[in-house]
Amino acid sequence: MKFFIDTANLEQIKEAQDLGVLDGVTTNPSLMAKEGIGGEENILKHYKDICDIVDGDVSAEVISTDYEGMIVEGEKLASLHPQIVVKVPVIKEGIKAIKYFSSKGIKTNCTLVFSVGQALLAAKAGATYVSPFIGRLDDNSTDGVQLIEQIVDMFEMYEFETQVLAASIRNTMHIIKCVEAGADVATCPLSAIEGLLNHPLTDIGLAQFLSDFKKVNG
Ligand code: E4P
Image (tube, rainbow, N blue to C red):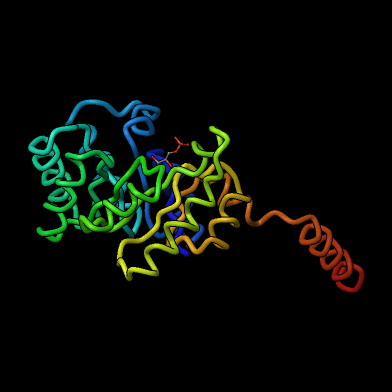
């Protein structure tokens, strides 16, 4: 399973990249706003800066909600850097835009997916990734991981090439559940990725090894 980091924070992206396990980055307008990145020039520069840090795909989301606007915006984003993936919401105009981008060889990430039907339309339009938001489903008393399982099964059954990108991950257990569900990618906060390292027996075992070593080596 690939790991993307779900942030527009350059320090965190660098930290995850330095860990050596990062496969890409996802951003959204809220994450960009959180970093105070506004104005077209700054936004485009920030995406380029992210691409310079990581080797993999970097999702950059369109703001337009009409077909023509999405195409203009998406083409501009895609021309920025070969690693850019155009992130498009799963609305009617978005599905048409994904179809267009797919025909032009531009990678897409279909976002705000909350149902199997939405994922089906995105895959049929040729999306590179679909992003089911598991945390937001859990927040609404619906099992987000179950949706990942359903979409993974559907894509396998019909041999869609679209990858399931589990998004809105809130904690380390979400990552483990996504592994079990067969998600192709999990986009996570850095804290959730680092949480995978945590185990008290590792800490106890390491302390013991070091103390035994000291006994005979001073
Ligand atoms: C990433 O592609 C999504 O935009 C993001 O994971 C949403 O996460 P949130 O529900 O924590 O805002």
